[in-house]
Amino acid sequence: MNIVMVASECAPAAKAGGLGDVVQGLSRELSLRGNQVKIVLPKYDCLQYERISELQQAYADLWVPYFDEQIHCDVYRGSAEGLDCFFIEPHSAQSFFSRGKLYGDGDDPARFAFFSRAAMEFLYKADIQPDIIHCHDWQTGLVPVLRYEIYEPLGLGHPRICYTLHNVGHQGTTSDQVIRQVGLDYYSVMTGPRLLDTNRGNAVNLMKGGIVYANFVTTVSPHYAGEILHTERAGALRTTLQIHRDKFGGILNGVDYRVWNPESDENIAARYTVDSLPEKAKNKTALRRRLMLQDAQKPVVAVVSRLDHQKGVDLMKHAVHFALASGCQFVLLGTSPDQSVNDDFWALKHQFNDNPDCHLELSYDDELSHQIYAGADMMVVPSVYEPCGLTQMISMKYGVVPIVRNTGGLADTVFDANYSERAFYERNGYVFNDYTADGLESAMRRAIGLWYDHPEYFRQLRINGMRYDYSWSHPAQHYLDVYHHIAA
Ligand code: ADP
Image (cartoon, rainbow, N blue to C red; front, side):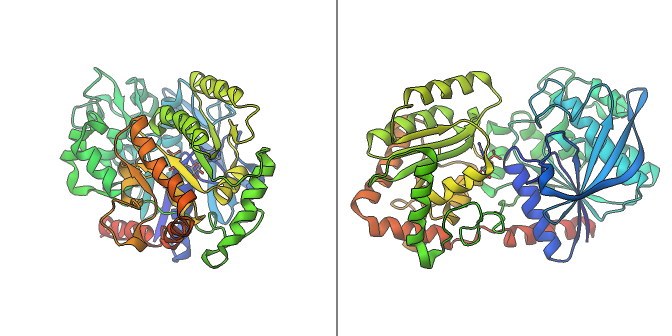
C-alpha cells in the first residue's frame, strides 16, 4: 500500500517522547513489509540534522493559505535512518518551526493547524496519491477535516484516513480563529457533532475534528481505549468517541527492536542477550562511572521520563527517597517544559548532590537513556495515566524489571510477580493500584526485597521480560488490517 504518515514527530529526526518512537517504528515495520511509506513533518530548526542524510529541496513552490494570505513554503526530502521524510519549511514572520523546540508556545495550535494545511496542500500539489493517510494526535487532527471539506472536492483522490490518539490529555483546544486560518467553512464545521468543543463555549477541539472525520480511529493500547470510552479520562471527547465507537479500537504500540535492543545497541558498554545476561553488569559499572556513583552491592532503580504531571512526578520524588532509604541507588533522566516542575527537581538534585548513590540528570539525552536501560535493575513508571508507555517495554527488553501503576498500556504489558493470574514465566514486573506513596512503596518493597533476598528469582523475572515480544510485528499487522478494512 501507499501510506503517508503526517505527524509532528518522528525519531530520530524529531522526538519529544513516545510519539516520535511510534511513527518511526511503525513506519519502518510497514516499509519492511513492502509498503511505500512517506512521512511528512515540520522542518524544525532543532531537527537532529546529523541523523538525516541526502536532505535536499523536493518542492519549491508551495503556497499555503493562511487567513486571507498565502505563506510560501519549501519542502525538503531526506532519509532519516532509512525512512523517506518530507520536511515542510514555511517562510513567514511567525517562524512557526524555528523556536528551538518542538512544543511549548502559546500559538502551538496555530502552528500545527498551519502544518496540517501545508501537509495536505503539499500532497495535493505534488500529486502524491496515497491509499492511506495516517495522522497522529491533536497536532494533525485537522488533516481528516481538510481532506473531506477541501481536498476531496478539489479532486485529491480517495485517501482513507487512520487517526491515532496517543494522549487525549492534550486535545488541541483553541480559539475559533483557527477555522478561518486554515480556510474551512465556519458554519459547516463549528457544530456540536463536528469541531465545537462542547465544554468550552466557542472553542475548537482539533482532536475531536480528527475523530469525527477520520475513517478509523485508534488509540495506543486496548486498556486505554476502554478507559477513554468508559471513564472521565477523555472529558467531553468521551461522548464523541462513544458516537464513533464502531470505527474505534486500541492497538498496543510496539518497540523498534532495531533501536532498542541490548544485543546490538551501539550506545552501551557491553552488549548482551538472555544467554549472556552477566554481561549486563558491565553496563551497570559503566553507568555508575559516567554518573559518578559508587560501586556497591546495591540495585540501581531508575526513572526515564518527561517530568509531566501525567507521569506521576510526585511519586517519582517519593521513589528517590524510598529507594535510597531501602539500600538502592537511584538514577533519574528527565525534563519538563514547566519551570516550576524543573525547579522542584533541581532542588531535589541539590539535596542529593553529595550522595554517592543518587544522580538526577535533568535534560533530554538519548544516548544516556540507552545506557540507563542497559545499566539499571528496576524502572519506576508511576503514571497518573499512561496511554501506552514505551519505557516499561524498553526496560523489559534490557532485562530491567518495571515497577508500574496499574493504568492504560502499563496494565496491558506488565504482569505482577506475586499477584498476576498468569503463569510464572509470563510475570515480568511489579504493579500497584493506588496513586499514593503507600501504593508505590508496596511494589518497590517487593521488588527490592526480591533483588536482595532471592536473586535467582529476580534474574528469572528479568528473563521473563526479555522474552516478551513487544516488537512492531503484531501491531503493524493490526494497522495493516485497519488500513485494508478502510480502503476496501
Ligand atoms: P511519552 O510519549 O508520554 O513521553 P512513552 O513511555 O511512550 O512516554 O515514551 C517515552 C520515550 O521518550 C522513551 O523512548 C523514553 O526513553 C524517552 N525519553 C523520555 N524522557 C527522556 C529524556 N529525558 N531523555 C531521553 N529520552 C527520554
